[in-house]
Image 1 (cartoon, helix red, strand yellow):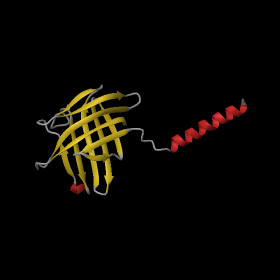
Image 2 (cartoon, rainbow, N blue to C red):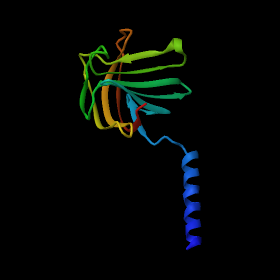
Image 3 (tube, rainbow, N blue to C red):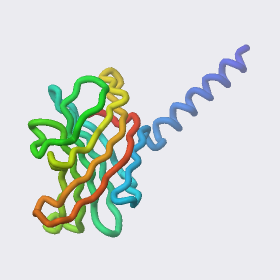
Image 4 (cartoon, helix red, strand yellow):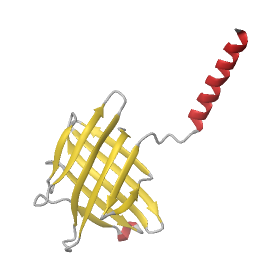
Length: 158
């Protein structure tokens, strides 16, 4: 019996050490921008009052890319991304660039609403899951737009 207890204790300790030193990205963020895979290096959400902001980014040889979604929600549901002003309603964006001075910014417009669905929102475990789809237009007024689609699962709320 003593051998079994020691073996169980060793397995628990080894498991704890492996867990502590392993990659802690326990979330999934999968997206495409105009059909091209967006491989997020990070993703997180913030929540203040009823305002939730979800952001994901990646850095590669082309520079940096960021996807952002702004919602007013306190429970799961489907939300329109139709506001030109993130303080007034749901909105979303996308940006990319090699340097801070060369970033191109795209944002949703009220005339072309997108949709975000929050399928799970758990304030106890501080995680959010859902999907999104929207068209974002270059904010400089250039006639360029991108289609952004994706899903996220267990994104941490900070």
